[in-house]
Length: 157
Image 1 (cartoon, one colour):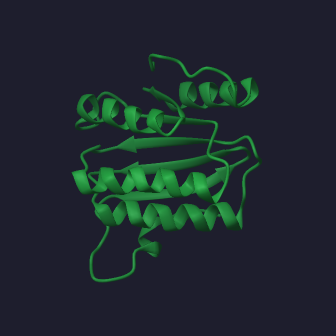
Image 2 (tube, helix red, strand yellow):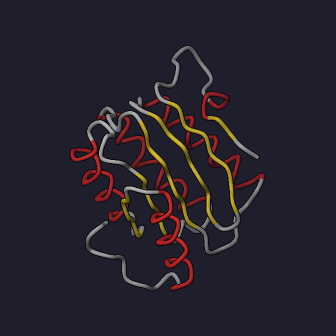
């Protein structure tokens, strides 16, 4: 089941950016193209709730998000993302690992990645940033095998 955030954005304001998601075994895959606004994050939350309830992953699961285009997002979107992480933890056990695939050509990569990593770490998530999908998937699988109490790496690839 592949979901698109645009199906989850009611009201007069449209989501800027594109995010689709689906589950592959214990990994929830996301493909995103920015820049993003607050409505995109609201759509992400609604779509993720739908996915977690309609096609729930096992207890030990992770996210792998592939980004293209731009990572630029507004401060309001970052605040909404912070609330999203709180709400997802309240809905069910949070993911054991979150991996972002952000090639060097993605706009604002060097500005946004440290902010996003800090936000995930504040919420107790293991976070890794990678240039390739293969390395992100390998790392995520390793995190799932190592269990929930393993230490998060201090530096991303």
